[in-house]
Image (cartoon, rainbow, N blue to C red; front, side, top):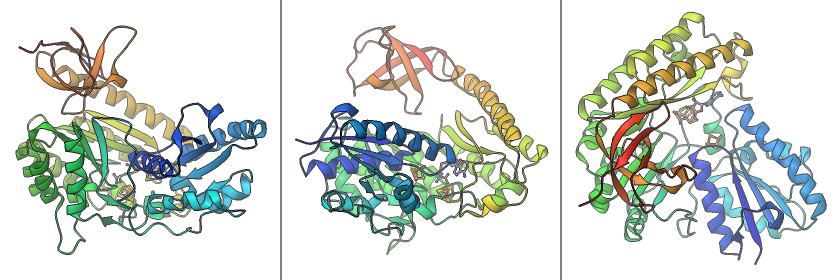
Length: 440
Ligand code: SAH
Ligand code: SF4
Ligand code: F3S
């Protein structure tokens, strides 16, 4: 049996694509290995969102080249958004690559490329337009947590972002197909399903007839009942509606958490980013959600040092963070991406300033997260037990609350994938601490 290792760079969409690659190659007899030294095929599933993501993959390729020199039968491939965007360059720069392929439905080319005699570059330099075939079983490495892709691509063309160029136009899977996949996961005992899309809450607006994301959530809730947790990512502020807030508030399966990237607190910067909402409109959406959904946790993405971002503009990001009080934030230094408008904006911010601003955002968020987490002390929460989050050395079990907060807790043995009731006794900026409440 040939052995396969897949290394994922990038976001959850790439994680899902990796699971698709494994499922696809399982049909040709490949089994998974973690050990590079015994792999027959290593595929790096690459990300192009920031320069750093690309560099990480390039340096990994350098190491693998040495391995391949010792083991000539080892085959190496690059897939994903990086393969999609940089196919020709990769082949030129790393001639020892056996295969380069894009993302999404282009992945189905992998078996053909592996058996081809010479040219191993995917024919598809154009971004995907369809869907990965539903009849290929996606590999699931968890028996209780699963991702379900509901839409692909993005039409927003934010001026800094490569995603519309790598993943193509926005398209939604038919609801019945999604419901079928969700029902199968329910039947196999899955406890948590995360619906994935670049702007997941824009789901279905272009279907014929249109189906709103809230309507999809209602249909999913009817399929899974209250026993499965339903999450979704990533949401775009422009498509947060009263209907969605109401669905989150009323559907027992849907978790009270939203990842809602703001990017900047300055309306001027937001306009230059092409985000299509202002600071005030974002705050209105937050209010709408919080009024409807008790204990909602809100997380976000922030870009610092976008071209033209003044000290004052940056201060507005800090003040927005304070005003909203995010539960957590991912912050990034602006990274100019070739082919996107912002890369050519004249007023680029020096890297030293970007670095200072990043440090300021991270330090403020630490403070805010600590304060937010402190509010949970004394409360009881439901935790989905997850061994990856346990701290084995110190005997602490781990898991996540419905708000997606990490909890470390003491007080007894619990089985992975089960729900535990935990009394919260403390918190850091990163996680909550607690004690298991024994079930009666
Ligand atoms: N679809 C999501 C974002 C996907 S990309 C949305 O619209 O919210 C994930 C995050 O990477 C973005 O939210 C943004 O914060 C960051 N990002 C994207 N392009 C970037 C760039 N050129 N430089 C720095 N960060 C970037
Ligand atoms: Fe990129 Fe903007 Fe689309 Fe998000 S909404 S994937 S940031 S273009
Ligand atoms: Fe990266 Fe592609 Fe995701 S560029 S962030 S892997 S959509």
